[in-house]
Image (cartoon, rainbow, N blue to C red; front, side, top):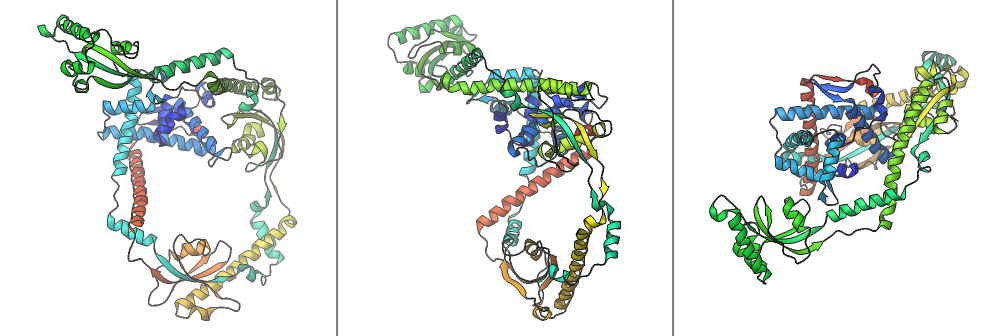
Length: 629
């Protein structure tokens, strides 16, 4: 359900809208509600609090999306994710305040369209869904609409800023020319490995380096722990689905499909008013006469064209097109959806006047069979049960670990699962469950490492939690010199060899800049590499560091090359010679358009970031940094 909404509303605003319409359910922030002594807000922006539950929900949603996209190999740490979420929430409040102060407003019609977009299911606006979400958040419809109006106003301001980003045609052409530029280069390589053969390293140098860099030669502190874990998959096998629940869900589905039924209708409308000829009695009499004529075989279309006072449909013979539930006022809708195809109604009274309705056709969305929907419903029920059970078990694990800190036995009884042991791991690396950074950091926390207590519950992922305690601990220690002697000797030899190569390269550069042809400064066994023409994207034609340097070097002057010394990715040192720069005389319109689009987008993003930073700089912001741990 929430994914459908997220698909329609992209970016940070979409995440915020989901936060606002999600039922607050944040186990991982529960300690903040239990009077832990910490701050009871995520942030305060100019006196306006961002509540803890909003941060917890936003973090859970963000983490779930990242897990879905990257699995267990998240590109960010938990602290980085939490920082990103808190920044997004602060930015949202700052922008909302700034947009209102700047005079941005959302009309009722724009608000209505946005609500329809968010709460449309299976092609039509679902008012029950809308009202249930609003009620679940303990809001009135008016309060929810105010929140959404505020968020849309922020988008309005954002669009105004980004759409005003300007890149002139001449600037786009200049950038495209730079992008399509070609450069002719050569280079000389100074092999570091070749220099190392002549380097002699003394024992004193090795010992001095060892003593001066003790921290580089330490065995890292490491631990071994036991842990009890539970995952949603552990629970799923024990979950059974009641047949009655499936049948009830199918009945709800069937009602929802029937509710999306559409009816093609025509009507004749006569309006009532305050004059005698527009009195309800007079108009009713005329409608009865029209009904008699219709019952006698008169054309509905003809009478509608002649008598109907609905300007939108009269000239089309009263044609209203296809009508769905919610499109018409209640008396009209109830009558229309109670008719048989081809039937003409009795007189129907609404606030618009009196109507005669003819039902021309009926179309109903295809209804899937119970067998077709069974698997889907069963999965939905199971997922809800698993989520609730996982929450309960996680909470009981947390309480048991806290109340019985000297042993995991109470936690074992909760999950009915024996503890497991890790291999040795450090704070920076581990295997198995210790690949998780939060698991490792918890293992090295003061309570676990120094006091020997059970850990707090650890969220490995939204569907995977664990509790651990220390089994064994080894302090960091200095490695003996003999163990690292070869490593130190290689490092010293490589450093000395690089210094020799770099000195030779700098000397060659100085000679070439002084006017000596590059060929005349070559040492024995050296040669000129390359002599190629490259573009910025030709990273496969030479070492990427050489390509990167070539496009940062100044243009050659007076028939002399530009010269630059470069450390290559391969580890060697190169002297790069830039002989020629070619700028295209003619540029393809498509190339210019592509560069303009890319640069304009970058300018727009930069300007929007500048606006946010400016507004935040003037705001008074207090962050609860304890949340980021």
